[in-house]
Length: 78
Image (cartoon, rainbow, N blue to C red; front, top):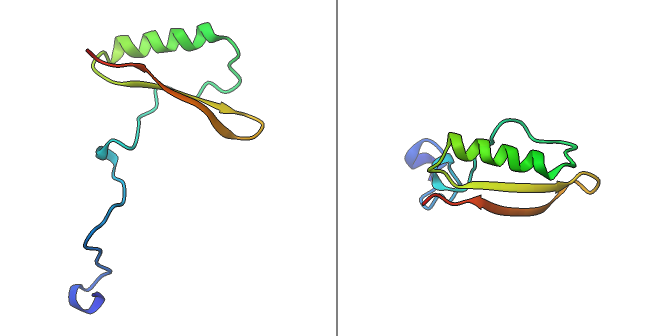
């Protein structure tokens, strides 16, 4: 394949791209150390106001084990 194309050719490339729905854009900076749920709700409302036609996902991480604990869609556009 390399000699034919001059580069490594992949016919059935399944690498994720930015616009294929697998990547999400972050809203502001992560809220490290946040223990108040009202702060999260406030940020959610601000994000909904700024992007009313966007899906909004909330992700929670365990800061000790450094793993994702929860992920859910918090806003679905009408």
